[in-house]
Length: 316
Ligand SMILES: NC(=O)c1ccc[n+]([C@@H]2O[C@H](COP(=O)([O-])OP(=O)(O)OC[C@H]3O[C@@H](n4cnc5c(N)ncnc54)[C@H](O)[C@@H]3O)[C@@H](O)[C@H]2O)c1
Image (cartoon, rainbow, N blue to C red):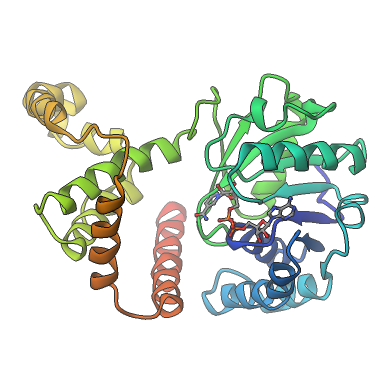
């Protein structure tokens, strides 16, 4: 059994870094964050405790454990001081290959030989991200979904250089944090979650921009329709259950021709022109007028309730 990390280092204290830090602190783990920007680092000093404590209110963490973790939450003074005695280094800097490569070069030089090194990249290929590291066997991607302290899925993406024991260790750490790690076999750009999201979102944007539906209607149609079904059963099981005893064989007989007709008409563009970006932004801002903080809190409350219900159904 993998020993729990004595210290986690999170590099990059933005949206995702603060989420990872809050998650680790909420499990009672000592975590230190470092950011190249003094302002971001200062913000993390209040944001991480706020997000960790919010998990208590959402019944996703226990107060005593969160407070114990927060006692050992620190803001690092330098990359070296943050990384040098960490058992796990989590990178969460912007999605820019060169920035990540330079950072991992530096991390590789100061991290101890037994340190697990992971990137939060949304879709860059790990062999590119870690190209400058000498010790690529301990490097892999652990891609969370936003917000990382609430959504359990984490895609674990090894490169061809990653050692199996390091994949196991990442898997064990993530499970100990209450995550659901899924190991991706082939490191394709965007991995699995990003590719599915990108395909879905292009069609959603297209339906709004071509006037088929407005933003509010589209969001409700997806979250109360396919997304609700997919939360209970993924897309393949959903269709396997959609033709009674005939299963997916009968489903294909009945509906494949329709799907094929729709597939030929789906959006295939791969650029959003500036005027389309403006139209989309205006439509979304018109639909959601409230303050982003309040909208996010309401979303997190719904997420926590859904997670509790799904967990209860799994154990029932
Ligand atoms: N936001 C999301 O929804 C989401 C979801 C999953 C994964 N990701 C991935 O997580 C990573 C971080 O994304 P984010 O949304 O948190 O970005 P962000 O812009 O909110 O935060 C990035 C932070 O990194 C800091 N930084 C930049 N260069 C640095 C360096 N060399 N050393 C230390 N700190 C540095 C910045 O000051 C900033 O505070 C990206 O790879 C992104 O693709 C994002």
